Amino acid sequence: MKINDFTNKLFIGLFSSIDVTENSPLDDLYFDLRALQDLRQVKIDKIKATTDIIENLKKNPVFANKILILQDEIRVLERDRETIDEQIKDKKDAIIDAGGVLPKQNPDHLESKIERKLASKFRKLMKHLKI
Image (tube, rainbow, N blue to C red):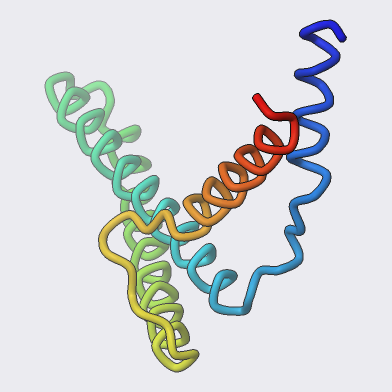
């Protein structure tokens, strides 16, 4: 058996036997929470970048109209961030109501669960192949 054939069979065996439908509603809530937290960080980064652009444009009075447009954009981004903050609070409440525990900063709950499953499948396959 060639190494490429072995590798292909190894990964096919690993990925074909993983059941991704096992996610509980709590896993979905953790995933949604993480997505909302990532989206919130994007909004914060955009606000910081736009504020920096405004500071640079203030040095030249020709860009007064552009500054007003960017300030309006910052207000929209801040409203979006506030909405996301409310959604994050709702997701956290839903997690607690579902009997879950709130994850620490940057929850990697779902990713680590998949990694553990892959590692387990890999060990079983290696044991089966006696490698």
